[in-house]
Length: 168
Image (tube, rainbow, N blue to C red; front, side):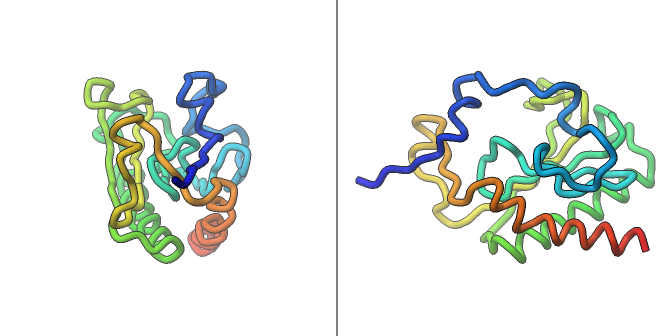
């Protein structure tokens, strides 16, 4: 029998992970990236973060920079920027992680399953054929093959390149 280790998830599974101060989608400062907050990208309209407790390797969170709860609260520029970044996120994940597919989801409101209902966000989750086994179903445990810091280092250059091309 092989042992699968994901000890960095245990604090989250047990409910002992430190609570984020403020809003997860509004990391402090103005930097376009921040390893401590897993911030891959920030411009005037959107933020992209790695999910600290991912469903799969490379699980991204995409949100408007402005604190809004519903997609209908976005102005045209924000909506356009989010959709453009959603495309970019898919391209970057496909380029680096080579998933067989992607799950893209957005839950509007707590009743719809939003864990953070007051700040609109999308989940972009890479998926591979046979990527999860019985552990996810029976024990609510997921195995992630790459450490989150390595995933950050892999993806951040492409997001920062996007930022530099959009600012010029």
